Length: 205
Image (cartoon, rainbow, N blue to C red; front, top):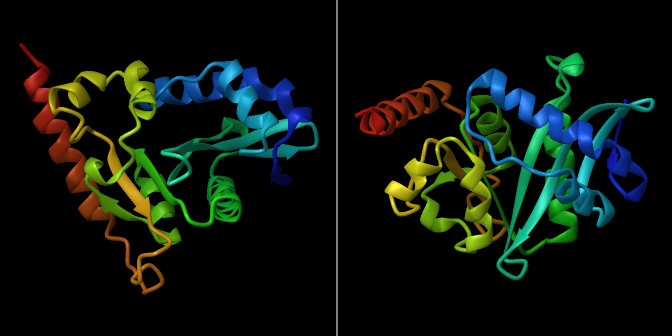
């Protein structure tokens, strides 16, 4: 298995990446911002992505988005093909994209929004902390990407202050980032349940 920085030679995988992301969202029943092959190709060509390959077979992917004049970067679109799940590959890709982000944008704050407990755990282990959406980028183009998510109405109803996703942030200038942290999975599970009950109940007529 190769986990490498993507380049123009990997453009041929753009469609399978998009299809895998979309299918995963459908199975999990969670909201996700859809991406076109053209959007993915741009990240592949500019070296802002990590791809995992088993020979010539696609296994996993994640990419970097840059916001606010490089003050913020997001690690987005983390996906592992169904044939390669439950092998720890997602964690390896997540660490690789994090390291690439730190190398290319050393002063940037790295953030993400997710409903997945597994991704929250990986983020936490890398030094992220849960934050309010007000601490993330205010770039309207980032939030525009949420329009294809099925929970976008929740985001708009709260004036972009909160949603079913949890915002997480790594600040390279945070003096506490290297202290020992313990992930309380039950806390995140409770938080997710509270959000679902609060927002989805309001959605019903």
